[in-house]
Image (cartoon, rainbow, N blue to C red; front, side, top):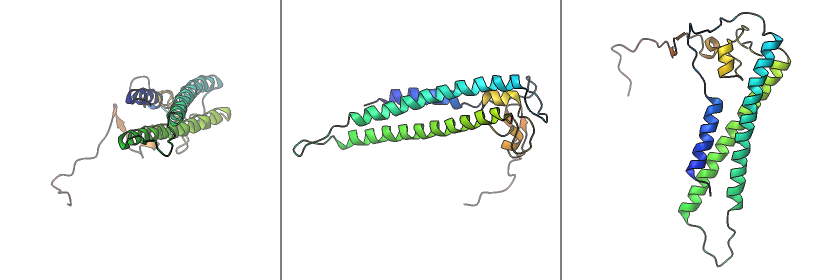
Length: 177
């Protein structure tokens, strides 16, 4: 049976893959422009996407191997043998469920990365599907599989530094209970 430690290690690996870096204005961020990235830039992004894809595949394989080993360690009981305690079965089920969620998440990420590779092949990578402007390089480095610029992703709200601009608080209004 795998320990919580192994699951924690896999979660950390998954987090490294999907971590979203916040962009800060004024620190080398390029302004979006119409058009597309050059072939050299597309090759640079291809390397980033392929590296992220390899890491995601590695995490996926680890999760699948762990699930297989958990299932292969399940004892088969004869008619006179005592079954494993309820607590042990519950713990195993919880571990299998966590692995299933990690596997599903990695599979989705691989699909997004494959779609990004197809967009690179068609020279459509880095163009926002909503406003048709180029997505800033820093955003593509942080989230290589993205299809939206920050403005479109956030629904038109702007970013102030690294935090979102929030609407004014409800002044004098009470919440309905």
